Length: 193
Image (cartoon, rainbow, N blue to C red; front, side, top):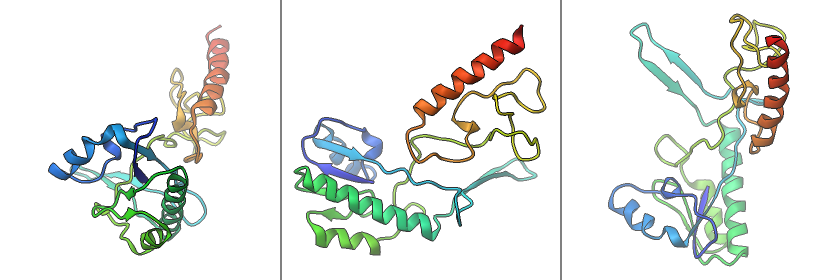
């Protein structure tokens, strides 16, 4: 993700501003002049298993989300291309979301992205469109709901959101979710007859 520090027509909000405390406040004060661009990285494909959530015997929840080489490579490429796009659109300065942001004013600065750390708490990563978790399918051993969103074990439970996808689609899922909701609503109505 990159930020353009220039007048822009859309504002993503303070979550898209790096830093903490006073440094974050100073950037947040410039929100009217910030344009944020995001890139969706797709996990759970090819050599990437994605992350996982586990619960210990004591009931503590643990999240594990390793940033594998393929995701790091995609992030470096995306940040560089978003910076190029923003500079071509007239931005004088683009800033990455690294803990110590890289300020980009030209191609030489873009090359620095490849050497920057992509580690826990070293670069802001966030999810804009959560998907997966309750995949649909005909095999209850490999899916949570059937192909119409009905839970395999609980008779009157239907899941009608992005969690029915096997993983991230890599695009905004709004239209896909609308289509599934319409399909599933028809199945729900039929089941209620």
